[in-house]
Image (cartoon, rainbow, N blue to C red; front, side):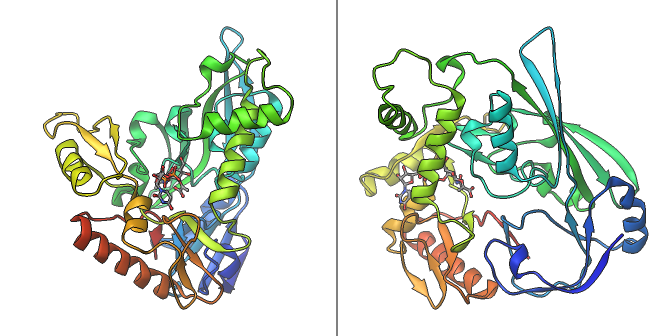
Length: 357
Ligand code: EPU
């Protein structure tokens, strides 16, 4: 076990804010978990993946475990088109997506270019362009650092929801995701199996095919083309954390009762609202709709604004950015001002999506 002291976290969080960890270990093999437990001696550790869904607002005196567990393997089910892919938590998510496409495995193409590690993906149930992790998730192998025991959690155990899972709950405070098993498909099924219904995704795929001279071709769209389109849209609209510090969407899109959404649409013409299936099993609260927080923030006049080096991205109002020297506290203050304005103008509460430490 390699223990490092006084570690600069600036390059270990995609916001690029300054913070120090007094003690940090890199977890590279599962065999190190015993030593790590002893070192923790009951303390709660902060578990760090790619640092792409985190905002540090202070130095860390608690122990930090940086998950670097590698590995990708797969098993093809000979009686069906299912391929099970087992991936170490420390692998890059986008690297996995590109590998799966190169192997001819379908199911991850809409989730291309999402920053972060595979182990972090189940925590917020990453999602984009009409797909989410839960669609392909089979199980996670988890080590309980408090009890020294192993757990295998299937999709139901994980309680996946929009940008939410059991891993965000207090009972998971000592759980460390070591690997994730996904269920993909290993032969091409043609367009019918692809998810192309989100926003301008279909139009982007068509533009890519047109540019390749495939505009009038009857040849089926392939998963690679979907990934190319997703990458093109993301590159156009979302800032690259390597150039401009950010943690993707800073707020979740609010989900509210349909009646209230329709009232807001009457007051604010042009406000988009998308019906969502209620996750309330009793169904008591009736139909619900999701509103784009980016629209609300833009309407409230925040798009492109900055306070010192903390800002709202010029091309996407849901993304807060660090123009260079912003501290985590400055970014949090900016977020709080936005929340206050959204409450005043629309009567809605915006929930911060990344973990604020
Ligand atoms: N919009 C604006 N102004 C903007 C940007 C967007 O008004 O500056 C409106 C438009 O009406 C647009 C709508 O917001 O149609 C939705 O925008 P977009 O398609 O970009 O999606 P989003 O709801 O803002 C979500 C995810 C993203 C994911 C995209 C694409 C959340 C919190 N965010 O964003 O995920 O990439 O959909 O599927 O659900 C992330 O979680 O870090 C992330 C980037």
